[in-house]
Length: 91
Image (cartoon, rainbow, N blue to C red; front, side, top):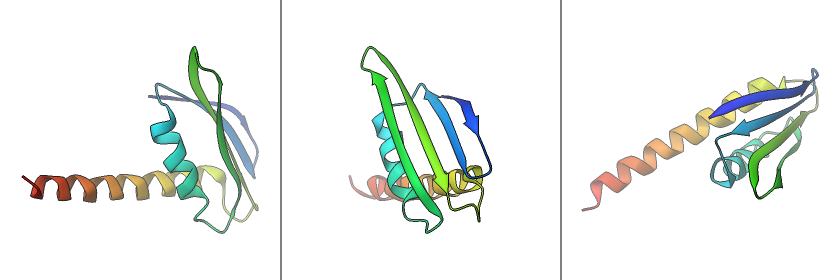
């Protein structure tokens, strides 16, 4: 997976997530909206034959978008780890 930042301001970041799809972008969007500082969290795939999601995150300015993205990704990784543990218990 490769992140390519297209635009960045103190309140907003727009980036492409090459090598990813809805499986990562949708949960990340949902997790971002759990934070009260997030004003916009969305993504789009411009064309199905060129599946490179473009994500936009906009904040109220109190917290930088990159910080919120890192926090949301960490929470998703933690949740995935817990799910993996539970699956290992089931046999």
